[in-house]
Amino acid sequence: MILPIVAYGAAILRKVSEPITPEYPNLKGLIEDMWETMYESNGVGLAAPQINKNIRLFVVDSEQIFANAEPEDEIYPDAPGVKRAFINAQIVELSGKEWVYNEGCLSIPKIREDVTRHETVTLSYVDDNFVAHTETFSGMTARVILHEYDHIEGKLFIDYIKPLRRKMLQGKLNDINKGKVRVDYKMIQLK
Image 1 (cartoon, one colour):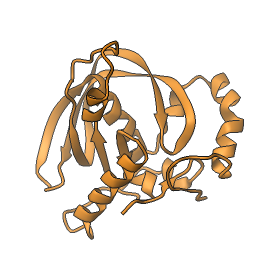
Image 2 (cartoon, rainbow, N blue to C red):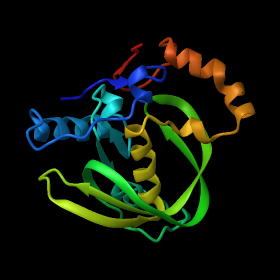
Image 3 (cartoon, rainbow, N blue to C red):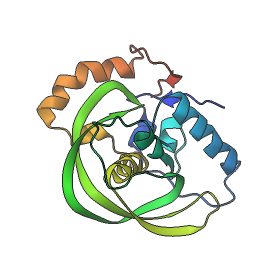
C-alpha cells in the first residue's frame, strides 16, 4: 500500500524516534509498504517518520543509483549499492573525508542543497528478521544511510546548510508546510 509522505513542518519530523521490538504490529507489512511508497515517490531511501511513524526504521536502496547511472556519472566505491531495511540503527563511527553532494528529500520537495557528510559510516542495526549487524558503508550508500538516519534522529538535510541560505529558502519551506507545492506522490501536511 502506498502511504502519504509527511511534508516539512510536521512535528514528527523533528522527534527522535523510538526503538521497536520484533512484536511491533505488522512490521513486515509496514516495511513492504515503505518500499512501495519509496519507489512510487522515486526515492532511494525512506524513514518511518516520513510516513508518520515515530519508530527507528528506515529503508535504503542505493542499488538503483548505480543501476540508473550514466557512463559520465562519477563512480563511487560502494557500487553496486545495497537494498535493505535498518531497524533500531545507531551510528558506531563516522570516518573518512567529508564530501559534498546535492541532496533532496521527499518531505521537502523541489529543494536540493549541497550537504557535507562523512565518506564512511559504521552502523549497528537489526534487519527485518531482527538479526543484529554491525557493518561499515561508504560512498553514496553511506550518504543515503546518513540522510535517513538523520530522520530517525529528528534532523533534516536543511539543518546542514548555512543560516543565510536557509533564510533564503524560508518562503519555499513555508509553501511546502502549507501544501502549496505540487508533487507526483501522496503527501500530507501535519502539525
